[in-house]
Image (cartoon, rainbow, N blue to C red; front, side):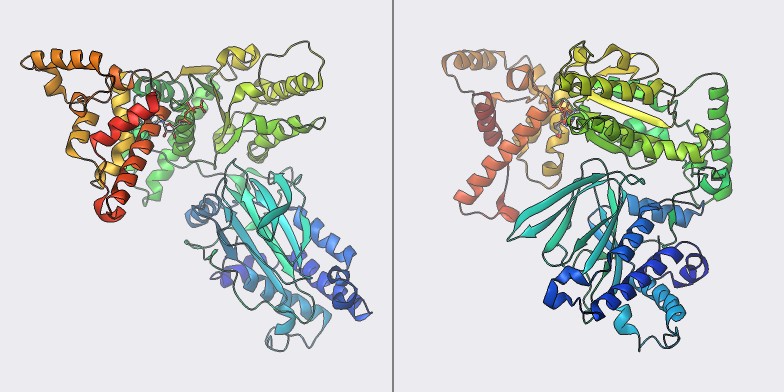
Length: 605
Ligand SMILES: Nc1ncnc2c1ncn2[C@@H]1O[C@H](COP(=O)(O)OP(=O)(O)OP(=O)(O)O)[C@@H](O)[C@H]1O
C-alpha cells in the first residue's frame, strides 16, 4: 500500500494502474450525489442520506469488492512493509487521504478544465470531502479511540484481511454489530453513514486490515486527523493495493519470499515461553518443523541478512532440498494435534509454533466459532480458513515450495470435528459436513501442501478417526500435567517478570528454585520429623516448611494454568497488604513466601 511519503512511487506506478477505477468511481459518486442534492434532495431538509446517488455509490462498492491486499514484489523493503501491515503490533490507522486526493484532482480535470493539478487551492473544498485510510487491528483488538464522521458522510468499507466485527456506539452501548471474515472477494464491501461513533473489533483469528473510504456532503470538509490511532508507516512504504490477480497469474508476479529462518535456536525460543515440555518440543521440531523449513547450511551465513547474495544462495539450496524431498515423496507434515488435560500449555505452544514459523500471520480460531446455523455456513467458514493458502498456491502454479507456509490453529477441535454418527439431527448433519470439509482440505482432492493445521483438544478420544490418520492431523503429541521438574520450570517462568523487577523476597526465590541443599541435608532430619508431626497436628503449614514450591506436597498434580493462578493470587494478596500498610505499589510491593502460603491455602481450599 502507499503511505504519506511515497508520492514519487505513487505517481509512477499507481496512478495509471491500481487506483484508476477507484478514483474514477469516487469522483463520479461525489459529482452525481452533488447533482442529486442540487436538484432538491437536500440532506438537511429531507434526511441526511438522501443526498447520496445510490447507483454510483454501488459502482464504487463494486470496485472496492475487487480489491485485495497482496505483496507483489520481492524487494525486501516492500516485503517488510507488507509484513508490518499484516502484523501491526497495536491498533493503528494509516492515512491515505492525501494520495487519494492527488489522484482525484487529476481525475477532475477530465470533468472540469478549471480544475487543474497546478491550482488545487481553488478545488480544495471538493478534495477535502474525500478521505481514505487503512485500519490495522491485531487479533481480538479494537481501536483505542472510536471514529466519528459528520452526519450524512458516506463511509464505504472493505475488509482486506482477517475478520472484523463492526459496531456503533450509542450512549456508550454497542449497537448494530455485524461480523465479517476473510479478505477474499466473498467479503463484500459495505456502506454506512456518519453520525454516531463507530468502531471495529478484530475477530480472534489473526490480524485484521480494513479500508475506509469516506465521502462528505457539500459544505463539510475533513479538517482534523483521525485521532490518536493515526500512525505513519515505519518502513519505506512501497507495498501496494492491487486487484485480485487473474487466475492465470504468472509465477514471477507472485514469487513469495521464502525467508531464511534460522531453526537452530528453536528449542531455546520455545523454552523461554513454556516450561517443562522439552520432550514434546523436541518431538515437534523433529517431526513437524524440520521437514518444513530446513536447517541452514551455515548458521553464520544465514544470519547475515544484509548479504542478499548469500541469502539468495541459501534460499536456493533450501528450495532445491525441499523439492528433492518432495520428489522422493517425502511430503511435509500438514497437521499436528496437541492433546492433554486443560491448562497445560497446548494453546501457548501452538501460538509459539505459529509465531516462530513467521511466514503468513497465523489464523487462530476456536472450533465452536466455525459452527453456523445456516445450511452450508460451517463449510463456508472452514473454506475461508484455507482460502489464502489456496490463492497463494494457485498463484505459484501449484508449487508448494514457492508458497509461504499458512498456519491455521484450531482450539477446542473436539467441539466440531468429533466422530460422525448416523444421527439425523440438524446439529449432527452440520457437524458431519464440517468434518468432511476439513478432511478434504487436509488430504483429499483439494489437499494443500502449504498449510500446517494445529488442532488442540482435551478429549482426543472424541475426534473423528479419519481426521487423525496419517496425511491429516498425523502427529499427535500429548501435553501432560507437568512433573516436579516441569512445575519448577513453570514456576520460574511465571514468577520471572516479578523476580527481575526485584519484587520477590529471598526465601520465596529459594522456594521457587527449590532449596535443594536444605532438602538433601541429612543433618536436619530431627527437625524434619518434628515438622511432619506438626503438619499432622495442625492443618496449616508454616512458611519455614515451604522449601520447594514444586514439591508434590505443595503443587503436586497442578497444571501450568494452576501455577499461573497461584502467581496471580499471591500478587493480589501482596498488593492488598501493601495498600493496607499505607505503602505505595511502585516503591513497596514485595511478594513474600507468606503471601504464597496464603495463596496456596486459598487455592487448595
Ligand atoms: N507449560 C507451561 N509453561 C508456562 N506457562 C504455562 C504452561 N502451561 C500453562 N501455562 C499457563 O497457563 C495458561 C493457560 O495455558 P494454555 O491456554 O496454553 O493451556 P491449554 O492446555 O491450551 O488449556 P485448554 O485445554 O483449557 O485450552 C497460559 O496462559 C500460561 O500462563
